[in-house]
Image (tube, rainbow, N blue to C red; front, side, top):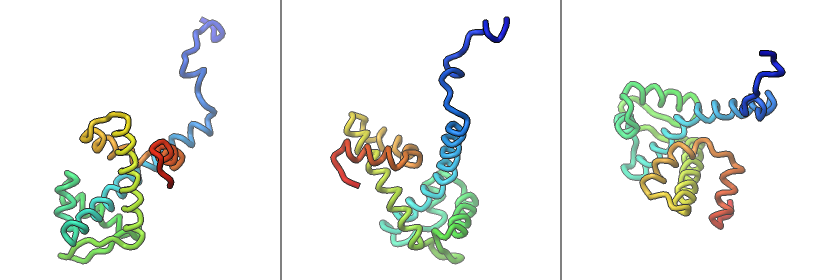
Length: 152
């Protein structure tokens, strides 16, 4: 069968230009990389708010990871300037870490509110927002806020 006679799939005829597609995949990879850090700082902020401190043991238990994994990620958060800690002491957010935690929390609440507004049950909305909050663009979040009648 010649190339001209071969049927074209919908995927190949509707594909975006290479730079556009590469940019989209790059943004998704970047979001996946930031997801872990965002989850950690959000949880650390919550632990500090409720218990007055965040310990690596509590972070590991609540995120369902091993203690060594939590310690390794906390070290990454330190390198990124998001937390401080000392041996046998708690983990504390820096100003940058607290600001990131607040942004993540606000995105999470907005997405939960949108999902609830369209009829998603509360538990499903909370669970789904955990993944969606890291990948939604500012344009998408602004549209969600407008839909819900909020201003960002």
